[in-house]
Image (cartoon, rainbow, N blue to C red):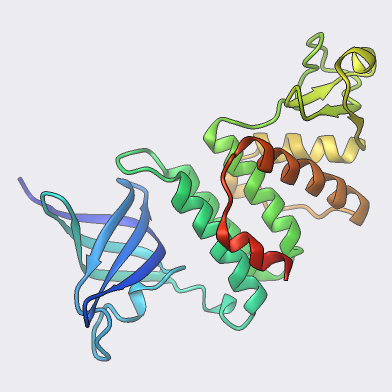
Length: 244
């Protein structure tokens, strides 16, 4: 059995091991999230020095041992250097990485999560979108990939697809005007409904193609953030930097 593998992915995190090595977490297309040793990566003349850092996207030649992976070579496609001159962008990117690392699993198909992460960093680096909108899109699409996202396509009371004018946190989705008194919820703008439907149903490759007015973005932010905090049941340490 050949234990040498070529994996395509992105470095999520890195930590020093011993005097010269690193252990890196990589979200890969082929093996999901893996932990790998990058030997000698902290030596000044190491070929793995720049490639063993968060945000690095490329092809990783690794050896699979009995209980761990070892990186031999990295062909870097993107360092995302454009983020490094913007401290706030680095904070957002670190938050996205932490979320991907928390939900990513080994030996699982994480290709959609990897595509989302790459597209999100590209959008963040482009500066075409507000960082807050990039975060909202990333969070809601992550919920979609996880299979735990709000129902915004039909009323949770009667099943109607018309007049979905209210959103209920308790029911985890939309309710129509007729069911509002019984099911509860608060009024939402039509543009907010359309934005949620678009984010949930659109392929990752076409996700970052729109902007929102301030009022629409604010209400969408409230819904997505409230839903995430209520149903994800996990606090991400890097999120605190987004509110500084």
